[in-house]
View (spheres, rainbow, N blue to C red):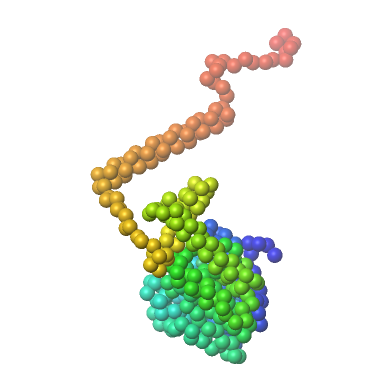
Length: 337
Ligand SMILES: [Zn+2]
């Protein structure tokens, strides 16, 4: 099948994955909506507010599924997971289920009626004995949850664990506790992530994540054992001396999430630093310079376009700039007639 077309596949007896091509640079392969259960169908995540997700949901349901979505759940509030909740409520009539923590973060994306919240550990009971447990897994975001279908060994991880890349982490301490909780789940066979391919070696992948974070922490502690107080940037430069310079800020952010966790655990002294006061006069000058630069660039573009037009005109017309009267040619003998 063409890699950019929609794909739907059976993951386990009760689970279908509908993969929608994505062109977001943060997750270039695809974003997945999962459908769980037969009689009563629960959808997990709903994609961005874009027609392709809506057409996919409606088209897939019309073409393949005999039943409609009864419940629509999300793994967290981010717009690439919750964009179509209102639409699902209005067009498909499903009840929306979400973690309490997500409600205040879903500003404007929840319908007015038909929303149910659930608590950590609560079981969602679908027809035919399909039971999903809701597991709070904060870290990527404060309201992140996973859904676990233990009977079939299927974990829906949202962005807590992705199919082919590492995720962004807000609270590293919480994130590491969430990973430790997930790796201890009984009967875990496959992870269904919010983006990217299914993970068929879930424990190995979770262990890699756990090890990776533990290694980074040991490295940071190793640098600090050299003594003295260091900034996150100093630590980053020692950890990644050969890093591509364009990735330095990202690496510094990464180091800072670790430092925040270590500090919260009381393992580091924090010297708060001194923020630079915003300089109003300099800000005004910067705005003025930016405006001038934009004008100069716009003028240069205009000249460039004019020049190109002149070149085209020159190709289309005779070289009158070179000749008052151009040379002319006549067949030998023709003038003697
Ligand atoms: Zn996402």
